[in-house]
Image 1 (tube, rainbow, N blue to C red):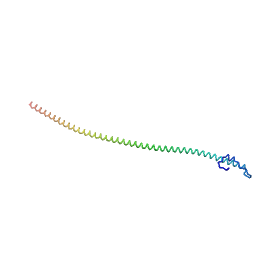
Image 2: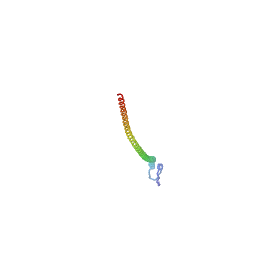
Image 3: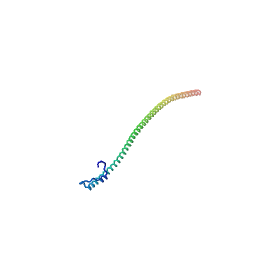
Image 4: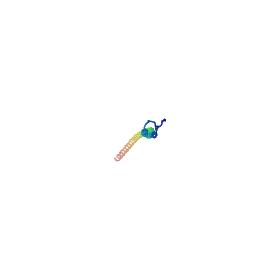
Length: 166
């Protein structure tokens, strides 16, 4: 056995040694080699199981890494989307605020214009009231003068009538 290669359990069991005088008991050697082959067989089978488990775990690790990358990408996309949604919401809120300010200013201007119109109407009504009161006073004076004239005429007529009858 000069070349070093991995021995299989069968090679260990089937190996035969040269016979020399005063050598080991061939039966003991065969029993020992059988025990070594059996132990080695367990090691080989255990190694195969471990290799299979390593492959399974490696495949699982690859799958977990793939899932981790997918989760990282999903998290990045979610963060990016959340940022975009937040920015859009802020833009919309700013737009709504600006629109409300414009409408509020417009409503304020309209109210101020309406208030000025009402004040002008009130002043016009006061002036009209003063004119109307002046007209009524003038009318009352004329009616009073007319009543006085009628009473004076009546007194004159009475005096003339009383003067003729006496």
